[in-house]
Image (cartoon, rainbow, N blue to C red; front, side, top):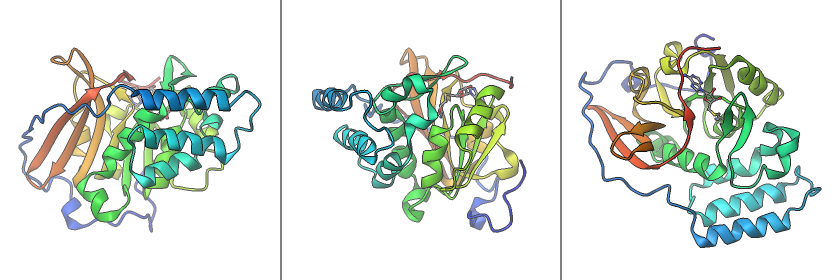
Length: 277
Ligand code: SAH
């Protein structure tokens, strides 16, 4: 994996130049907002209705199954139209084992092998919506160049590719990297590059990234991530928070002066590990 090819769709302004901002990394702790609030009864009812309306044997290829998932995400408070449209387009059942395919459009996390899980749609949708609230995304209407840490089965990478100019996704486990490559084989709707490596290091040859999203949470933010984030860009990652007594969703915005940090609601992601296997 090296630099993006000539003509890559990431026009970068001078303000993107790596290291152009002040060296300090001041953080501003915002009041925790309960964005990842527990399911409300309305959403629960919608989910139950979906289960009954989708008996085994219903064609999972059908756009109707996905549009029901989209309506449920909407009922659950997701209002970012590009994100909702992406959920309507990517066939989640193609990214999980056949035995689990009938559960693919429920709001549930599912095992993808090797002790890892694909996150539930509502959590992925919230993370992608948060990316869309960055200064750069609001100005450009797209996520630009995105770094994903934790490719897993490749589902979120496929969603991201519909929302971004290009996606570079890193996975530390070779079998999952290969699985994602298989799942995304023939994916022609967006530019996705897959890398087998330790995502804690980011991917310097492609930096800076307009957005960074992690699907695995550690005890601290790897320094490469905020360093490789463009000014006006945003990173969203789960992280252990001693005060909260568990994982929270960390949102970091890079400004001309440094970095601003917010900690949102509690989440449960697989651990961010070091090295690659
Ligand atoms: N976005 C994925 C979710 C995968 S679960 C999907 O849509 O399927 C999180 C993934 O992060 C796991 O596959 C795990 O192996 C991977 N991971 C954990 N630590 C990592 C690291 N340091 N670098 C890259 N991937 C890592």
